Image (cartoon, rainbow, N blue to C red; front, top):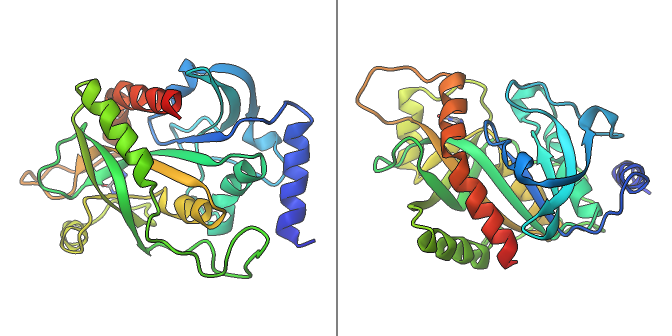
Length: 273
Ligand code: HPA
């Protein structure tokens, strides 16, 4: 067996020794969006540092636990805190937890993130459903030997975010009077926020929002056949009149403020699955 398959088997066996692993939904909570974890009836929360082959999260605002619990009457795996390329992990380390979720039987993956708005009609606090992404400002996590037993060498990326899930969430948002944006997420490495020229370039290329996560996770999830839904909280505006600067604190606060809307959408989506 390859090293990757061996590692996945060890990680899976460790988790299976702790809890029954029959959840088919996985959720990854982004910066400042960890509160959904408090709504979940938790069966078990495993700190990342205890899980064999898992990287360990270092970013402020990320608690770093793999949780199995119940949300809207369904069993879900929740990653409270994710790994970013800018922390120094390889793209393969960043996406290892996605492979683990797949090995645990997850078929549907819900992602959330904080992102900068580059669509000029966006406001801070808006929620944006991601309908497509631009991955080319970051490193593709499938570079390297392909594991054919997991997925094909050249995955199709014509529907990286499941249209049916997007439609479901749009209906839920409408029923709950939540104003929902939709658009393209451009993935960047960070850790710098973009320069004014870079925000304008991303806008010109068709991006609506920009962020430092999600894209690599999405690619690995699509590679192994999962259905993905992702939403961004717009925490700052890249294209703006004022001379103000963007800080991590402001991003976390804006995410926290918008979080109840996101929690509602995720909870209702899970109910509908
Ligand atoms: N750029 C990149 N990543 C981000 C931003 C941004 O403006 N806001 C939150 N994450």
